[in-house]
Length: 152
Image 1 (cartoon, one colour):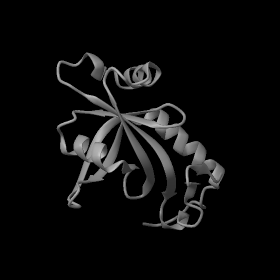
Image 2 (cartoon, rainbow, N blue to C red):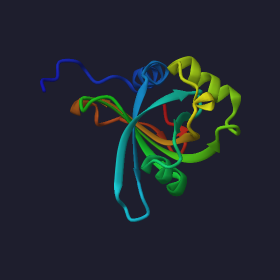
Image 3 (cartoon, rainbow, N blue to C red):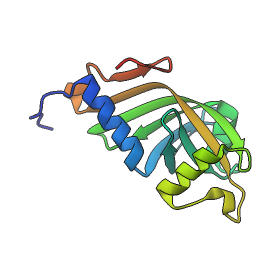
């Protein structure tokens, strides 16, 4: 890769991140089971300004791992324009999810897991750490959030 642009400022990275959270449909969800067996899948998501919301079937490996593990790593982008989000997970039954979160998800994706014929559960992911970089030259300053607090 040839780097031709200067690194973005932390403020610009945060703006870009928030824009991506509002517009991108899929996010990579990384989990592990109790034995450490990893699982990586893309899921639709919605961002409510404080947390990301995911929906999946409770019987999938991802559903079981999110429920049992209590944390996840999420990723946006390709290998050149990366966002990594480490977060704490809370599960909600379909009827327990906050309606505002479910409506945000529906507005973004056009799909409502609450009305699907199969059982789905919701997972709220509260970010604890966020990194963003577009190329190797942006490794310094990549941390936008630590311990659940924006550093930018």
